[in-house]
Structures are given as C-alpha cells and as structure tokens.
Length: 287
Image 1 (cartoon, rainbow, N blue to C red):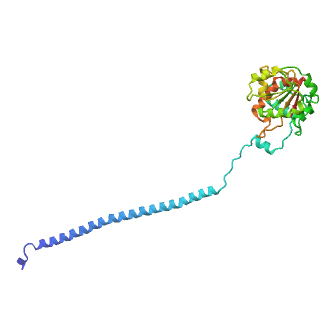
Image 2 (image 1 turned 180 degrees about the horizontal axis):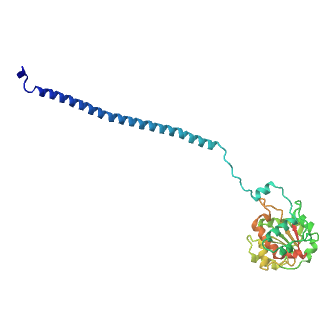
Image 3 (image 1 turned 90 degrees about the vertical axis):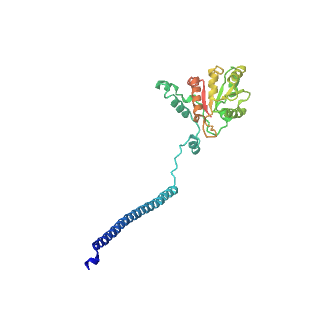
C-alpha cells in the first residue's frame, strides 16, 4: 500500500498549497488595485462638489452686482451747481438806473492798487461834476435836451478843429450807429462823427477831425483814447461827457460789465477827463 502511493505524494501537497498562496496573493493585489480607484473616485467627487460650491457662490454674487447697478441707475444723480454768470444774475434782477456813486465806486476800485491813498482822494469827484442821470424813461435826445438846455448857443460858440463839445461813450460800433440815429432831434445843425475802430482806419478819422469843426463825437473808449494819444482829438473844448451806462446788450451786460470796455473807459477817464472834471470844465452824465 505504501509503495503504491509513490515516492512523490508529498510533492502534490506542496503544489496545491503553493497554488492556494498564489491565489491569495492575486486577490490581495486585486484588492489593493481596486482601492486606488476608489480614492480617485472620492477625490473626483470632492473636486466636483467644490466646483459646484464655487459656481453656486458666483451665481449668487452676480445678481447682487446687478442689483446694485440697477439701484444706482434708479437713484437720481446729483446735479452739479452751475456758476452764475453776469447774464444770469442780471436776468433775475430788476434794472436800476446808474448814479454818480456807481461811477465813483468803479473808479475807486480800479485805482485802489494803482494809486496811493492821497492820490485816490484826489480822484474823488464832487457832486457838481455830474449832470442828472437818466431814470430809464428818456430817449437820448430828450435826455440831452434836459442836461444841455443851452445847446444851440454852445454849438455856435464852438469853432475849434480836432475837438468836440459833446462826447458820448458806448460799448460797440453797432451801438454807436444807433446813438447817432437817436441824435437827430437834438443836434440841429451840429456835426456828429463816429469814433470806432470797425472798418475805419484811425488815420482817416484824424483827417476827418482836422478838416472841419465837429460838435459831437460818438464812439468806443478804445478808439477815443487812441485818437487822444495820436493827437487827432484834443479835450480842450470838451464840456459834456455822456456815458451810455444803462444800455444792455443781448447778454444783458452794461458797458461796465464787459472787462475790456471797462478797462478802456478807465484809461480814457485817466487821460485828462477826471482832472478837467475837478476843474469844473467837464461835466459827466450817465445815460
């Protein structure tokens, strides 16, 4: 019986045992291989969850921005306050006739940083230096008839060339032409001349003043000052200076509201007119 089993019966037992061990190792390796797959799936799931959370947060934030933009659009915008111009101020205020005090204040303000205190006192004009002012009811002719009642006599006595008895100062060439037209009922036989720079050379005006006797000059302060500087016009015969004070242009500006015209007017007054006023040779009227 022992011999029939053969010599290698134990070898079969060893082989079967080794086969069982190999199968166990395979199963263990398959389990280990399966576990990383699970980890990968877990990690992928966590990443997807995080992405979803982020997307949800983004979707939640975007509408908030939209709401704030909508709120901004619905809120009324604050309007910036515009600076008031001279025109705006004058449009809402009632026009007041000019007075000698207005001219005095303007002269004092202009010379405040150009003259000493003593010199400024010397520039002050007495009430006798002024004619009555226009109360906004007069035309130019009616006003001049009031302030120059003896005009016919004054006109006949004037015989000097390159000079005028009556000088009317205004802001522009167009206004000059308007005023000359308004003089027809006042001037009589007196000769009036336009004194402005537009389309007229200063040399032509000098020759015109030298040719014959001129009684009335109407023009802008810049051209009148230029004629005085070139000795084309002298102030020896001047008796009346009328300032077109109350008239306003399309922007509701008076002559003294326009910076360049105001500057030219101050230069004209400084050229000798203020001194003649103090000597009572010239009287100033505000029309």
